[in-house]
Length: 134
Image 1 (spheres, rainbow, N blue to C red):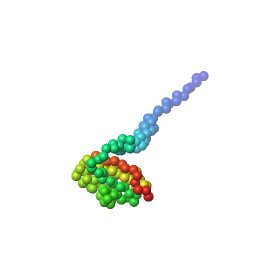
Image 2 (image 1 turned 180 degrees about the vertical axis):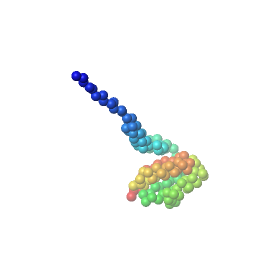
Image 3 (image 1 turned 30 degrees about the vertical axis):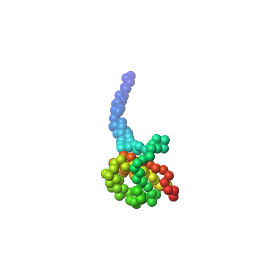
Image 4 (image 1 turned 90 degrees about the horizontal axis):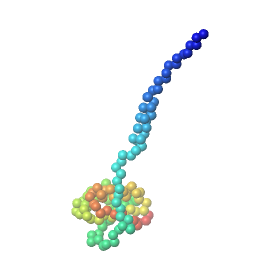
């Protein structure tokens, strides 16, 4: 009696599912990671502030909760601010600028004003607390 063994065909391992998984992971990590340009804003805290009197007074920008801005007593919109800051920087780039947010103003609005001042070329920008309550 002869026993016949059936020869099973070898299963082929396909690499397609592995490539699909690797591709999906690649796409996931590309979309999940942020390629934004992160910038740091230099602020002088109270402990670092120099108490020497300044010969030139700072120009004050008040960021109001209703969306308007007040630059040295002149009421402005957010769109008009960069042009006014550029004119201020053109006159004197070393002029001090103090940004004072009103209570309830979102932090992003304050950062936008600080960015606009830096982009205009002003080098001495500071954040002032103690805005008007409201």
